[in-house]
Length: 311
Image (cartoon, rainbow, N blue to C red):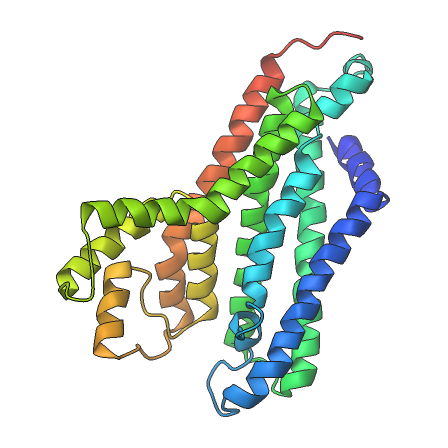
């Protein structure tokens, strides 16, 4: 497996695809710094607690936050690294020649997945370090120890999020023989989850519990609860909630009903300690891990059982 891992790492890091993807992710960091320059100095009080974390969550009227850019680009990078992991080797005949060597079959798929995850981790860690370093120069306030731990947790959750999309792309790469089909299937799932599922969830919630300007707070909370439960089918929603809960200590809950109550009352909770923030986002983290494991397990079982013949 280590030999396959090293070979795949070398292929990824020396490919034009890696350069293009890293440039794409780097642009998101540049946009985030631009947002920080435009908004943090003018809108955020220098004495505000956890000011360094606002580099990642602050948005403006023109551009969204760095967190949004990362949630948008990570699936693209994960899909690009995994959509042809198996079927490209199969179509070129390299897979049958590889299997003729004294190498275990599971070492192939494990090495390919771990190599893609390693490259994805390098990208995420690199762009977060770039944003943090430039943000430190702009804001001029070094992060506290708790902020550093929260940022490390944010990086870990981002890697889990990318791992799901990589596992999904590898799954389609195992099931479909054509690389174009596996890429389109992966992109279709991403488009549905990222753009359409929240709209569908809102429409269903409005159909079950209609609300308008004259509705009571109970109707709004029921509507928000239904919409939130349906939206959490999407890993994009799970990632957004987990990262916001970790990077926004003032967010005392991720329950939509409780957020509605807080909005009506006009009160926000005091910044939570790190342990309580982790407790709040723990269900989302476990769900991301479970989705990634399920996708990779299905692709692993299918790859181990399929017949590989020479072309």
